[in-house]
Image (tube, rainbow, N blue to C red; front, side, top):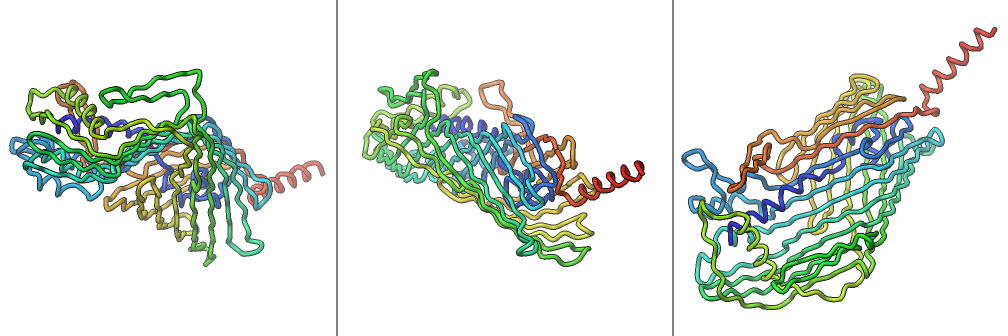
Length: 494
């Protein structure tokens, strides 16, 4: 049994590599098109236009666990799983954080437009797709996997286990205004978002008490599962496993929702060498999604079930991973003893994020140092981090930055490169989390290898995009160039 749960965790873990988030490294990249998404008060240097799949594509994953938490070196140089008898329970559990978790984000813009309607007014319009998810695996679950029925009887209390995935389309309208005429250096921005949910899966085990003895297991479970999607019919088989029917003709939106982004920036001017000290703050994705009752299926359990005749699976080199994985899924669902109950409409918040930063430019605004605090308010817990950034502007159209993040007690290096012309094609590429130690992992009993697996915490993301810059007729330098050009024309005519 224990080995099959290991496969369940592995299978669930690595598909999450297709996730991402907005680059924190762009927060202090002046004139960046990307950073307006982090703080709507920020304004790029030019109007712009972006298209599907090219403008803004991000994928990544953040976690406080990695391969080194589950694989251990042996005396002969090979790697042992945490279930191996030669890996002690104290060694394995002492190497785990208190609350192991993984988060994912994926988003891409289908259409992205930004334009000026005055010297102090900037508008943005966007259409995109977002997918996010969270996996919280309590430490007591791994104690159960490692130790099993070490004593007779043996009791485990597994709390706050959750698997949540969410997908929705987003249409946004944003506005930024420079209020320097009233308060010098002050800019504010806001964005309203209309959300169209495609689907949501939500499994939460609030409490699972396992009492294991040689002749029976007693399970007290308080758990619930939701599927919120149209055109998908989820049902329970007699053995308590899930099955589903897909009806393409009924596919559609599962509900509607709305969210807001709010931001502010204040620049305190010092002198030409240091330019200014820039203070900024923003909250994004502050909103909710309403799922209509016809799109909601709910499964719930709350009670005690007794099982007899359960044999623990023995570990060994000849164990079949595929059969073990199938069996543990079936037994785990049987333990939860979920039953379908009438569905009803559900209001669910999305995951808001908070940003607060301070930046000090120097060398006549050619370089700057920035400090950014960010917090993601997840569905079940909050993740926060502190990022120190060094930004360089070697040319009029280039931004280059490196940053160092302290993510949930782990450390990571990030970078960003941007080409931001006043007109023409611009691009950016970067990562907030760059892992430096990797290894190849071969899945036992298969020919499948997982190359470039981070040795420590699985924190990685990548974001890139292209856009068309269309200038800014209200820009002071642009106005000066046009006036000079007109003066030359008039001189030639004279």
